[in-house]
Image (cartoon, rainbow, N blue to C red; front, side, top):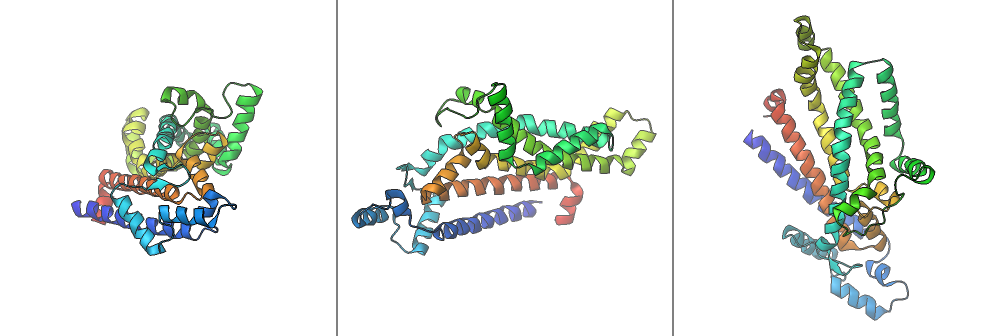
Amino acid sequence: MLALILRRFVLAIITLFIISLLVFVGLEALPGDAATAYLGQSATEESLKALREEFGLNAPAPMRYLKWLGGFLQGNLGESMARRAPVAEVIGNQFRNTVVLSIAASLFGIPLAIVLGVITGLTRDKWPDIILSLLAILGMTLPGFVTATVLIYIFSIKVTWFPAISMVPSDAPVSEILPNIILPIITLTFVMTAHILRLVRTSMIDVLSSDYVQMARLKGVPLLQVIFLHALPNAMLPTINVIALTIAWLLGGVAIIETVFNFPGIGKLLVNAIGDQDLPLVQGIAMILAGIYVGVNLIADLLTLFLNPRLRTARS
């Protein structure tokens, strides 16, 4: 088991290294020049040269990658070109805001998805299953910005219950942020619930039709005990990775949703940084998001192996 865990950690580190290389190469392939994008087309050659020297843009690409990677390994993400501040400082508040939004959406959406998935699994092909499955399919197929736009039209324009966009600054306290994220939470819940619900439903149907569940029912074990002590724990095993990916997706900053609602999160910051060609900021955000995805997937994979002895034995 220890060797398996170590192997997973090594693969995670290799994955992050490959991602860092792909991020750097991708940014190098972007059209235009970062110094020109920052100073504008009317910038003089002297000012462009000074900016390139300040941020090391005139050095060969391999040297700049090694310097950036070395700083990243030491916890130094560099300095934002457009904002003239350390990247870690620029990201700090934006990432905190995304974490607040992610926690709120997860605490509401994940339990709701599991409960609805159990209901649809127990009422297979009946009207609760049909209605909830149709809503889930709708949530899976509709783009997030469409859902967000519809919610804004209904709850901000028609009935004016919630603000259409967030007007709080990125460094606002959490108490001021929470009232501005009701509609983003509803939007994210609708999207994430659809995927988790469908998987829980499928798993519940498979588990409920298994021999050991049928035997428990024949022996007179109460239905609720069969569901919550026998069926649901086994049905949740295939769902762990999907829930982990959902959490990583939320923590990664759902850029479209944050942009629609003008929410000062890390996803919106990444979109702005790409538009500004702020290379150090884009690299820093990309690596943080990659670390979140790799880390959450690693935890989910190890948790699945730990909870399922058959997988642990087969992969050892």
